[in-house]
Structures are given as C-alpha cells and as structure tokens.
Image (cartoon, rainbow, N blue to C red; front, side):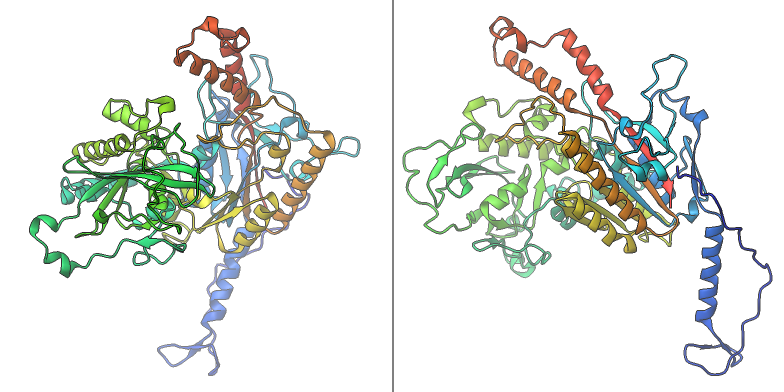
Length: 624
C-alpha cells in the first residue's frame, strides 16, 4: 500500500449538460455533417479524453488490506494470490478477498517485480510473533526512516506503508518454483469447457492418427527447434546445416497408395566429447509401425574424441570406429529414411537436441517431453525414464555407469506415443486446467478488447523459452542494470511488465547454478557477505527502484514481492539427504557409511524447519 500524501487536489466538477457541436468554416481537419455543416471531430475526441483522464485522476485507485479475511487463513498470502491480484487488475479476473482495490478500472499499468533478498531486518520489521494469540500473517507497518535509524531501502520505506507476509509453494521437505506459481494460473470455467470441446472435436477428426500430436510452429519456436525456412524464416542455419525438403503434393499423389502417408520414426542420438565440445557419435532410428530398427550408425566426429561419455550412452570405442564417417569438415547427418516420399514424422524426447546434433531442420516433429506433462506443470519438462516408468510401467536407463541405449530410448518414445493415441490427448497430462497468465491476459476484454493487453517479461537469462514464452515481448538480460533498462524501454508500449532484480540475492550467496548431468551442483556452507559489499548492493538496488518508479506514468500499480527467504540451509540439508539415500540405493549398508553422513529423524525435523523459514517472503503494494 502506498503512503498517503499530505495534500490532495479537490476533484474537478463536471457539468451534466451536453454542448452542441460548433459550426465552423471550411478548415483542414474538419469533417462534413449531413446538413453541410462542419464539426471539429478531433477536438471533441480530445476533450472527451481529457474528461476521462480528469475523472480517473479524481478517483485515484488504492490498495487496502482486509485483515479480517487474512486472519481467517491457515497460511500467509500465497504466490498464486499475488498472481490472482494482478489478473484481477489487468485481466478482469474475480477480485481477491484479502485485499481491496478501490477504482481498479483507473489503473493504467501494472509493474510486478520479484526481488529476492529483501529481508524484514533490512526494513526494521519485527520478527514473526510466537504468541498463540498473535497472527503472523497480517501486514506489518513499515517504520519510516529517521536520521538516527536509516533504512538500506529508503525507497521502499517511504513509498509503501505495509509489508505483507507471503508463503512460497512447496511441501514439507522442498520449496517449489516461485516463478511457476506466479506465471501459471487456473483456467476459467468457460475456457476449460471450450478447450475440452475443441480437443474432443480434434480427436474425432484425426481419429488415431499420430499427426494429431505434431508440434505447432509456435511450439517449435518456443522450444528452440531448428525450423525450416519454408515454415518461418527465423532460424539462421549455420554452415553445414540442411533442411528436409518440402513435400510437393502433386509428386506424392504419384506414389503408390500405401506410400502416400507420412512414415513415423522414433529417433535418438548419442554424443561424445571431442576437442570442439559435444559431437554426434551415434544415431538410432526405429520405425513406428513395425518396431524395426531401420538405422543405427556410429558417426566419427571431425576432431579426436576426448571422452565417449559412457556414463550417459553406450557408444564405447569399437573396432572400425576410428575410420572417418564424416570427413574432415563437419556435415549434416541426414539419413535417407527422412527424404523418400512424404515428409516423415519424427518422434523423440526433447527432439530439438537430436535435430541440432544432426544439423537438420525438420518440419514434422512429435516431442514426448511436450505431449506429456511434468507433474508440477509447465514450463518444467518430464524426463524420459520417469515417463516410461510412470505410464509404461517399466524402467529404462538403469545401467548406471553402463550408459543409456539409444534404441531403448527410441522404443520408449514409440510406446509413449501409442499410449497417447490410444487414450486421448488428456492422457499423461497434469494440471490440464492451468494456463500461462499471458494467455489469460490476451483474452481480457475490459481494456479495448481481446489482445489489447500487451505484456513484457524482462529477466535474467532467456525468459522467452521459459516463463515469458507467451508474453508479447521478452527481454533477456545479464545484469540488474540491463533489467532496469529493459523495463524502462517496455513501459510506454505495455500494460503489464514483469522484472526480476537478483543483485541482493547474488551478493548474499542465494543463487546457485542449475545442476546438469555433466556438472551436478555442489552445495557449499553458507558464507555471509561483508557489510560493505551488502550495503553497496542495497544502495544500487534502491537507486534502480527510484529510477524505475520515476519513469512510471500516473496510476501505475507497483507490485513487489520477494518470493522466499534464505534457501541455503534447506538446500544443504536436502543435498545431505539425497547423498545418503543415493548411497543406500547403490547397495551400501548404513554401517559402511560414515556416521557424519547419516540422515536421521532429527535431520528430517531440521529440514522441515528450514523449509518453512525459506518459504517466508514479503509483498509490497502501491499505486503511483
């Protein structure tokens, strides 16, 4: 909530009388009426617009927390509650009960900022109450900074009157993605019904045809597929790449009837590590109809192999593999099965990686990582081994250090596609009644009709392939300074903007790189930042917020939330737990493991406490 101003201008008075249009001589910019007179249409429109603006200014929007509803809640305000508040303002969703927004229609824009690292201590807020009679979930007043007690964030202390406690999603041992909770929301009943009807009609039309599950062009773009130029001229093919030729309908009709339908092939590639990095080393293709392996070849990289990555694949050095198969210059590996007759349909798991390894742009793709859902919803993708165990009731990739078998993985993709075709499009999906908030905003009709709400995501990394995939504009950044510049660039042309500042969390050691098969994350003991470095980061963030706020137009809603608290203790304990469980699964007995590495019931209780602390966050609401 914004702090009240000392003075306020009295609301302007409006006359209910309607003036007659002025009759003018022939002038540029005027428009003729039916009786031959001239009326200045532009002037009337401008006058009407000024009256609307004056009315909005007279009834400024404001936030008011409803403590009587907040105290009834079992937990603090959730991240999805913050999401629903934003959708209510910008996309005409139902109003929340925990906060009231006066004159919500007068809000011109919404800026939402995720800033992990702003702790209650920094704002001189009291610790959560421990008394049974006190409620820890109600908003807390932010003390104003004084000469004797300065705040590291004077902008927040002087701009927002209250800090509202929030709670991140998760269970008793883990904290789930804050971004996932904010950017994914439930479908409305009307939209859910429409999608079910469309799916039923589509399944009837295609019957049991695998082409029902082909990726759309938009899906291919969002998931970074190499796209043929005849579909969209957006992928810049590097030297040595090829694209599958476009099928010509006239030539297809000349083929025998049994060859006029597209063949379906499952494909899986394996990689090795050469002097140039990861390179293709094996290709396996299995026919969908017959289940026959139609292609299985080793491929020699152009540079010497450093590591065959046998931990992840089975392409071990064998006799004859030293003979060149790709020549001295890298060339695309384009099996002949993809060229004959109608364009073949390729099935794979995260198929874009295989196409990039083959250096091929292919138009017809089915991706089991997209047709099946991760149990926690988009944008997460499920693993092939997990999908096969969950839906096919068998285990693959169980050889440990013996690596994966590409034929086994390709057959798993075929079985998953068969199950999808047999059971319908809803099979293997979780959270089918959820959608991106940007899809919901695009359907909003209260701000000039559908499509009138333009959205922007400005974030570190590449938000266009993750949480910002459905936004109108996405801007990837490498620093908080670039995030500030991107937000200021997006303000004039967008109604909703999201940005994330990570400078404070980075200095405090909260950020860790994502784990990969090649480089699992090693959790190190928490190291506190020096006061000087932390103070410099806080001053930088405060200056960035002041600059951003000054560039916002009037009646802009500003929503700042921290998402969570320090996650390091939770991450460290979870790493210990995972290491102990992995040792037991590998066949070790508890007696063979050092006692300092055991996971006990006491450790479990400590983990639960750490998770609850990590889930705590703060929310600040205000209107400029």
